[in-house]
Image (cartoon, rainbow over all chains, first blue to last red; front, top):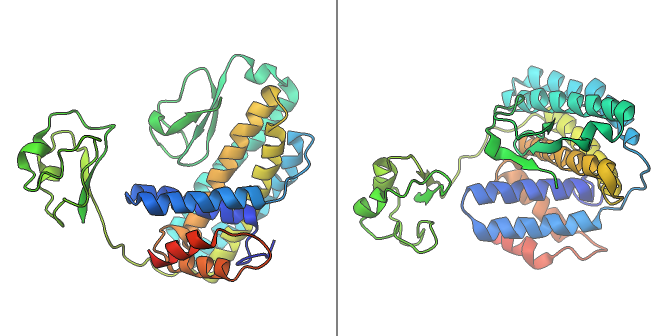
Length: 151
Length: 156
């Protein structure tokens, strides 16, 4: 933390990968590949975490739902920032789904995933456990072409 | 402004080839030749029956400034999402179905972190906050940030 700009290297990686996508949409191939290069660099730079189980995510998810997104909502409402409210609306729903998936995985273990695939919406992060790609993202309404199947 | 083709929508009716005055739409790689495309011409955009061609801007408007409190709130959640992404990435290396779920959660958390950064002033590569970030990287000490890339981005 606080190495550059008050951001961790992992956050700088996310900033950079997001800007690479934006540059791609602007048809700026060189800028896109330069930001992808930065994202790759910061991804490698960020320290590895020791992790034993997915349940380690739960306290962070609770913080997101009870404090993180709540503070985004409060501040965005005060500032009439509808873009930040949009981010909060999608993010809070997707995070609640993470929590529900982790709860189901805890109970059912691998049986939850054995006969289904995992699809992630590239627009909002929604995770679907399903046999087929969703026609429409239930959170952000992106079409099926915006889903990636996890290999 | 120049035209660009969304190849996924293009139905190969090729009316853009008929109307293009510079030949920019007729290329071997499916994309319009941006160097040949005439600034703001848009004849191909209007002629395309499948709405597969659109205009790309050379300059983007500056966004309204974000409030400090909104930025701090978004930054805090960005860090939480990144932390979760990192935990998931470690678990994703371990194999089996739990690793597959970890992979999905890592990607999802990255997308959630990216979305927070988009709203905190990093929506466009041209945004002032991007410049501030890149300048701080120029002065970063103690590791090997690809300096040439940072300089090139600041000059583009």
